[in-house]
Length: 287
Image 1 (cartoon, rainbow, N blue to C red):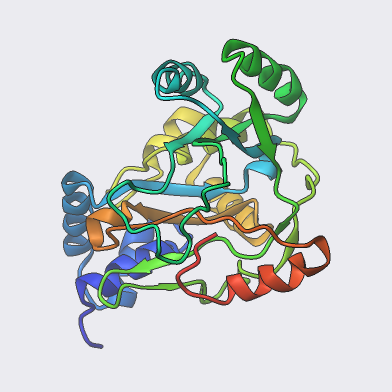
Image 2 (cartoon, rainbow, N blue to C red):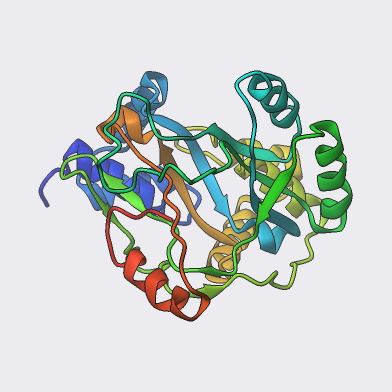
């Protein structure tokens, strides 16, 4: 077979590693390159900052977590203090100051109207379900008088987008796995019960796995699980969509996607489903 290009390798790594004791060797065979070459490329991309993580991508809800998109309206005088208070909470996964750039034409599509008064600090809050209300209330008190606006997901139209560095296109198709851009009512699914060993394995896989011939060797030593048991668990979790995939997560700005924006619309409730499906059909829309 032909030897895969770097962009094809990056796309394959985003789609997910095969499940097995030696997943890099398995993927290298599919790509027509040696395992040594694949490992060297991955390590190089990690060191260059093109990739920020290589590990398990889990459905946090199935692990017992509840998450919500939040926003806060601040002022230039309070933004730094409010942001500093928010980001120190361990349940904060993303936090951004957002707004229309001052040097960008306000006549362009999507520019806010003069009457708009949107919140400017946006963040994602995710903690264990039974601690969610208490911890969110504590966070709210810590940034008072600023007020947190919660925007829980009601329906998911698209997730799990990958980036193609060659074409600058995005794709949602994962060969061999269910499509993740199908609609999903975002109710809290049944939480799976895990043993202490399994919980430890999930914590290990949620960080970077070693980029070696036997990436689960250390996990075996730390959890006391055999390699066969770990492979069995990974396959089960992936089949049950507890773990969406074992994959590389790229820093999109480092591979050519230089700009992005979060967009919101005022939509009548009876049109929300139709408009959500329309938006999800565009490859430029990632979530």
